[in-house]
Amino acid sequence: MPQLEETSPIILTDDLTKVYMAGRIEVPAVRGISLAVKPGEFVAIVGPSGSGKSTLFYLLGGLTRATRGRVVIDGVDFATLNDSERTRLRKHRIGFVFQKFNLLPTLSAMGNIEIAYAVSGRKEPLDYAYLDHLSDLLSIRGRLKHRPSELSGGEQQRVAIARALVTRPAIVLADEPTGNLDTKNSDAVLNMLQRSNRELGQTVLMITHNPEAAAIASRILYMRDGQIVKEEVGSRSTPNGADSSLAQPSV
Image 1 (cartoon, one colour):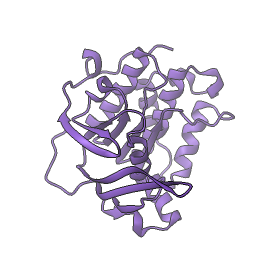
Image 2: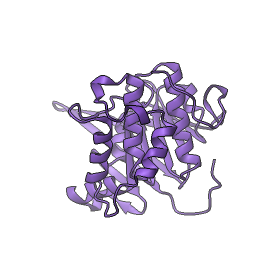
Image 3: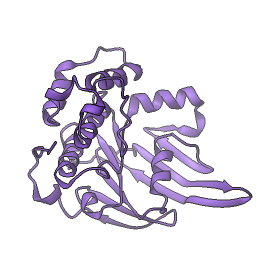
């Protein structure tokens, strides 16, 4: 884990609350969470289905608005931004990795990565040398001309990670990134997230139901009934005893 300096949190929440309405009935999904994540941390949030962890993920990414409380990303309070400003902040500061990949089916893997970079609003051109490096690490360089339907689930998730990392975001938010993958591909994905944290200095926050996946994080937060109920230090530095190099994924 990179050495952390005494600095302001890159992710901060204060009394964060989200309540959904089911008819006239209030259904609290997140209940008053206050959380601080420093730059360079790798934090895993673990909880069973219905614990509120995915709602917390959407709140932290600015994908849904809080009922009460604050989400502050790199010093900017989401509540002070209009919709276009929220979108701009997400594009510039956050990379998203989802369980369902969300690749555009009509584009090749390369096209999916290129369009993600294009819509990020960055002025500098895409660094293809950096993309080549990511592609080699993720073992997808020979698959970039293929469409999602021609890729395995593991390959699609690795393309989705390349798409998230190619903009060099300060924060990577990953929602159940190994949920649809076998053990070998899961280890490869976890290794890549760990390397993005260690080598690129990116802050990683991963939502998972799997305690073994969470163990690679520097800090593990456990959620139940919309609240963080326990916190502990990650017990392992790499998944399943692997070394820090990217495990060779299956196809």
